[in-house]
Length: 294
Image 1: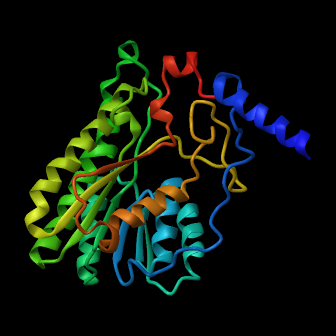
Image 2: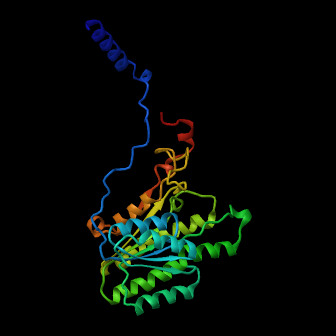
Image 3: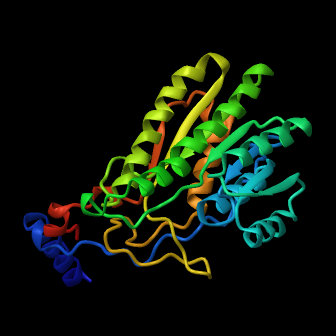
């Protein structure tokens, strides 16, 4: 017993004097999901309009907000995805309605707003999620039609929809919350010039509208995700450049962030903020590559 104690003390002193030789601890696995799901009805009786709600981030926002008691009004161009989302939302004691159209069609947005008004539905939370990516890289493949299409879907039509929803909020003197799903590529280059530029525009829009709408008690915020993806079984995908956990982010974490920003309980005094959720992806650079954390 005495010998073992002396041996351990000697090893401890050696480690203290020569810390570089001590092997760092390794994570055995990614921490598991909490077993208790927070379900405090944070958005109870709120009416939420979500664009691009049929898959990935939009779908997760719809599901997470439904869990918190919000009525979901979903915009999705795919009938199949709309029906699937409807089925997933049916178990919740909320109102659900899916509008099937392409957000790039200006007149369809007019029709949507007219239908909401005719049905006397006041939107409390607007989530501008729909987005278009592109495969055009750099000036060599400059295509003005591609730029127009990207900005039309990512910026112009969401702004038109936001104006229509906000005008009704102001006319009826209703507080509200506007969310824009941007991207870390509002700061970091993506090599898709039109896409990065459109996301940078959204960042500026969040800040400008936050000031413009503050007197009307309408908050405006954004979420800038990293790589959001998962397998069909709900597991994440490997990604060595995402420094935290080294895999993609399941979309439900963006949904939970949307609940946080939309909820007055958490974010009553939060406006003009873009919340980055990328598991450290935007921190990766050549120096991190040359000297990776151990």
